Length: 161
Image (cartoon, rainbow, N blue to C red; front, top):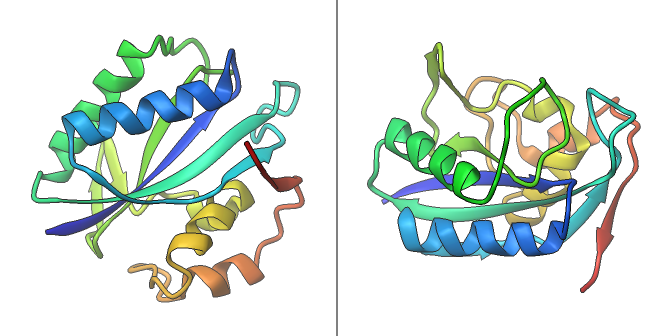
């Protein structure tokens, strides 16, 4: 079984409900979710005039190929009402593949590890909660070390429901 880390994000509507629905869909359509991070509220990244996000990282174990997971998460996003209008625009749900075990995938429509994860506090905070010692297969640094080296100053705070 392959460890797959996914990042969930939502900044429109009932953000927590969209995260919960995404977890349900991933569990039913891809693989049972093994671990779930806390939920973090984050200032919008890239397009900073958008509403704040809720972000969460989940871990699943599966034998599905990475490309199949990508197709399934795109279908889940669409089913939950995601509309792709602009880069970094607001969305009801966003699901990104952060890691697919230690695989390095560089295809036009799939890049794993996620090419920006080491630059984003909203990704590293919840990821370090689940896997602080996980080694980035390209950068050869742990998630905890990457987090300590961040220059991203966006506010990321744990929220409780």
